[in-house]
Length: 169
Image 1 (spheres, one colour):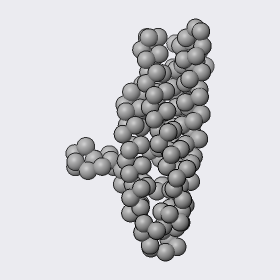
Image 2 (tube, rainbow, N blue to C red):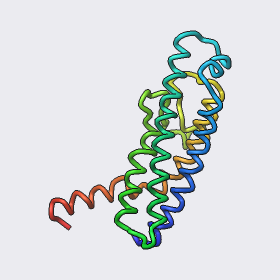
Image 3 (tube, helix red, strand yellow):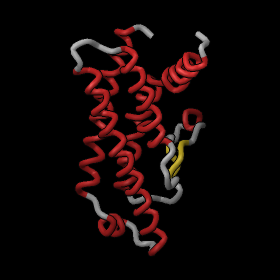
Image 4 (spheres, rainbow, N blue to C red):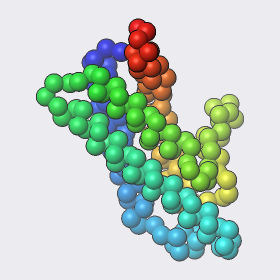
């Protein structure tokens, strides 16, 4: 991929990660388990689900913070290092985007048929409180854009690195 295009992807990625980071920080700073439980009272099972959900969001928040710092470092350097940028973008795909679409506690999943059904792409394991539902759907728009823009790095970069290690070009 040409250097200028990679640099533009880094700028877009930094903007989207900043947006996700701000949304996550705001949500996590102002919402608590008791507050979310008040929205829906279904007992112990609901509390466990909310705790798992918040755990996944905290994990995603850390991944976004680290990804944002790395891509910012790429863009701050006086001379743009194309190889380093590609490595960072690949890491962001595997840490941030995968953490969003495949949360550790499987509190939701992506429905691959959503574009045909006119429904949201995210299917929740249980019905979450509205605040959790809204933050997840908002984040899904950010990560869908990132995934679409960075899909090249999902496979091509890793394949190229493996080929270089094995001596094939």
